[in-house]
Structures are given as structure tokens and as C-alpha cells.
Length: 229
Ligand code: SAH
Image (cartoon, rainbow, N blue to C red):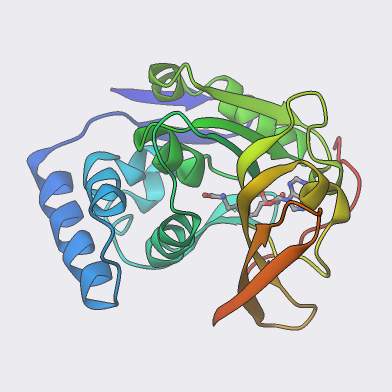
């Protein structure tokens, strides 16, 4: 089945063939070799048809371990990066997770597939709207989409067990720390240049945090405010 979204000039396929499944198995092997060990993360990547999240033009290359454009100057993150952040987040079923930067919604679905209750925010109106019309996402009733500024988080739904930021943050947004439970964790790439350092913060009972630093990555920037164009 091919679905054309005429409002946004994108065409998607919702056929998941043996070929796609075979390519997914290879992708899982690749990210295992790069060091991902969390079985739930690997299982989610194996189960989710990543090509559903991209324009039909990318159908044959959707399972390469790289980022791809999704419109509005944004990208669907590299599978290794999605797996890396998800592994660091140590998500368990039924946890409340806040994601900043919905983009294609692929990362959000990986979290939902693991069983998390996901609240995801996107600042670009068009990307938010595209996801509203994406039939595959209806399989995940525990996944909720918001149009807004991730620097503000979602105070109405706080506190969260986990927070994941999928855009390059110029600094650690204080409101996101405030919306974490005690003992909760936030995984966030921080930096203003071309590369950012992946950090994991753990919230302490006194409201402070401990910080662990991991590898460098390259994300699109986390920008303030909403974009309604
Ligand atoms: N998680 C996405 C990655 C998308 S790239 C995926 O799996 O495909 C990062 C996304 O963050 C972009 O869509 C960008 O528009 C969005 N973004 C950037 N700054 C933001 C902010 N302040 N609040 C919410 N979303 C933001």
C-alpha cells in the first residue's frame, strides 16, 4: 500500500516485505558490532519498519546505518544513534518518557515498542502535522504527540522517569531537570559546535544531578520557540 500525503508532497509505503525484514536483520548485526548490547533495543530495531518513516524515495536505502532527510531541514537519526541513546536511557516498560524532537517519530516508536509511555514534542508544525496523519503510529496508543518548545518540557504531564533529547542542546535546559523524578535519568547531546557530547544526568533527591559523559555525536540544533510555517 502506498499513501500519498498531498498536503506535504510525501509518499510513503506501508509494505513490509521479506527483503525489508532481511535488511533489518543486517542493520541489527551492524549496530551490535558497533557495541549495542541491550536486547530490548535490538529487538525494537528488528521489529520496526524504518522505511515507513521516510519518503518512498529512500525505500531501498532505509536500512543503511545513517541519518536521512525528512523535510524542513531535519533528519531521521542514524539507527546506531537511536540505539545508543535508548540503551543509555535504560527504559523499562510502563515508564513515562519525555522526548524532545519528535522528527520522524522513529525514536519515539522505539521507546513505545519497548513499552514506555512516550510524550514527544516537536517545534516544527509541519513535522508535527505529518505524524498526526501517519496510520502506523495508531498502533501505539501509549504514544502522545505535542507541538511545542522542548526547552519548556511538558509541565502538565511531569514528572517523568526519563527524558531524551534528540537535538543538539546548547546547554542543559533547567526545566527538563525540574520535570524529572528523583532517580530519573536524562540523555542529552550537549554542545554548540558541529559535535556534541552525549551526557546522562541522574536526578538526586536534593534536586541536583550527577553527570556521566559518553561519545561524541552530531545532531541538528535544538532551537528555541515554535515554528509554525
Ligand atoms: N527523534 C527524531 C530526530 C529528529 S532530528 C527521529 O527519530 O527522527 C531533531 C528534531 O528536533 C527536529 O525535528 C527538530 O525540528 C526538533 N527540535 C529542535 N529543537 C526543538 C525544540 N526546542 N523543541 C522540540 N523539538 C525541537
